[in-house]
Image (cartoon, rainbow, N blue to C red; front, top):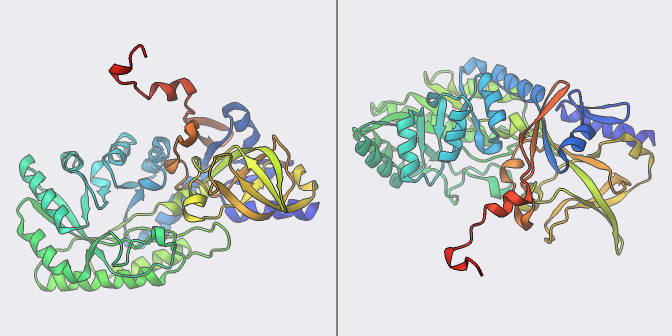
Length: 437
């Protein structure tokens, strides 16, 4: 079935994520995925150093005209090794929790290159970030501004602040990852920005840095970006006309990737937009890419447990489940799945459902997919899973947390190991009154 084999090769080529078939075996860089499966077991996330490096440098070069501070959105992939690699390339970090902030610092990202976003920062998190000396807080409400001012005063140290505007724009993406409409929990309404910025400037414990905006994730058009950015530009000019300082604009992230048939803007197209809207503002520009840097650099490697016929449906049960990759169950997201060996392509093609073993109907990956017939023990690669994969994994059904592997050339190492069942049991603690029961 040469046509089927060529189809899989074309899918891999489109991914541009360091995957390639060599003599019938799927490789990530120069490592056969079957070798990772043999040593580490499945399911397992596998990331490519070369793809991560290429993606970051391509994004940086495309946006260089604006001289931005690029702050990787840690929520997309918070593995310490991934953060260390990006730090070595010059990346800062966009964090939304003290845990992410601590990881970024541990990975070697300097605090002055870290922005702290999120709608619900706790006082202890705020104190830690102020003490660490972060670049700025992206503040999302008047209540948060008051809390930061209170904590800054208690510490005797000023806090740098950017106010996040909610531009009330529909990003045209999944409603669960849309953050820029007035009905979401994010940001400050445009109608309140002048008043809140005045409060910011009047407080001696706060340093007004500027503005931020973020309208959602997996955007596949520049139109919503442009609409939101124009509001930021107008607000910058209005604030400056009132003699209030605006030194930075954080334009967020959200640029999409191709999971199926999407055609998101290229890095160069995005970079040209950033340059066009910021050229005359004389501001430091901050960008927060996440998914577009890491998604295509990772695959989830899984093994077929069994095939099952259910009425008129053919079901392929994988050992990966939605506790390992939540996106299909949570967002109804699509990920291409390809066989690790192309000799499987000589088998008949049929319509199948790829599912996991968890006791939930939503534990599915692809439904009614045309695929090569697979047998128990065959390996598959679930593509474009470097973002929002391992970070959203859990131990639901008391399944060990999925491990992660980083590949570099001909070598690979585990960068998050799989817990043993003994370790999982030891995380639970029985209360004292159950002793001896």
